[in-house]
Image (cartoon, rainbow, N blue to C red; front, top):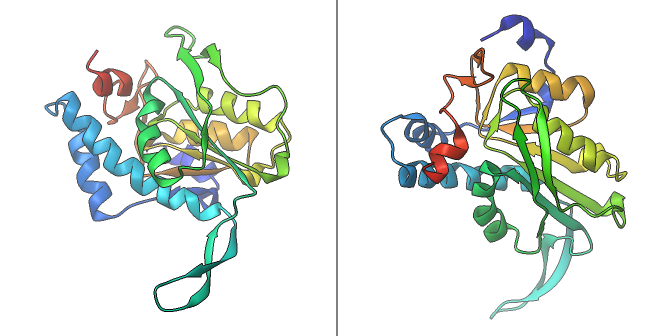
Length: 224
């Protein structure tokens, strides 16, 4: 792990989510002998935990609820707030089922980018984000991608939402594996963004893949 890069990170903005269930599933997900079904199951177990963690940002209001015994004021997620879950295609799709199960009121806005293997820069091919965000101050965005390697795709997606005047505190980046380089590149341009991850790996190889990582996430998930 690059100590020079790690020293530059603001770790208060990096939320490292670790527990025995996460660690067990990380081991299964990384193992080259795990088949695609096993990889998908392990990732879904991890993404559910990540979604619970990131949902702590959502504001609450009180609602009167009547139990079989009596009435009382319960706390619920503020229904006046708009929640957007934005998976970066294709690997980010693995978050969608868990996200919708946990936050059924959210809408899905897909982002399509692929990495140019020579430049390692993201190339856009799909964008479902509206041109103008309605009530940006009341909008909460969760951007999902299993791997934060160079950070270029995540950074471009954050930039897109920030241009809609959505407050930085309302935008969260969620990934499973991250490289110090990717974390640094995001924090350099967006220092106020919180990044949720379950592992900070050693770094990147010459091809821009995370070490030790899990290989190509999309290939492992979709058996391609």
